[in-house]
Image (cartoon, rainbow, N blue to C red; front, side):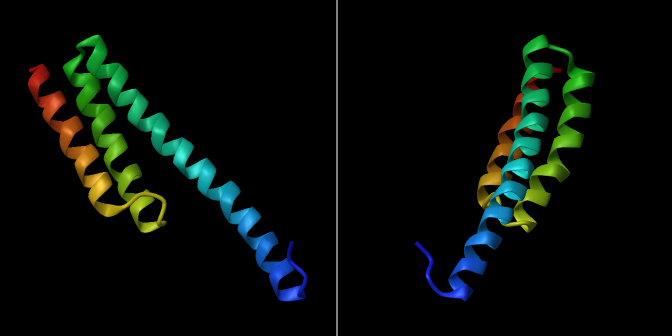
Length: 87
């Protein structure tokens, strides 16, 4: 357990950051789920719209340090190819 005042403060800060990061990660997953569901339903227009909404959200996760840049790019690329295959 943290003993010094500095270590105690860092522990409090980490707790707060963890909550924020959890919320951001959850938000990203929600957007990705919307794209997945649109692809499953076979609705090309809805899938394109969902992908357009999810892409900046994923890249925002990159700038905030929640998702690695290559991971986000890979996810966008794979989703885009699946949306394109719809029609």
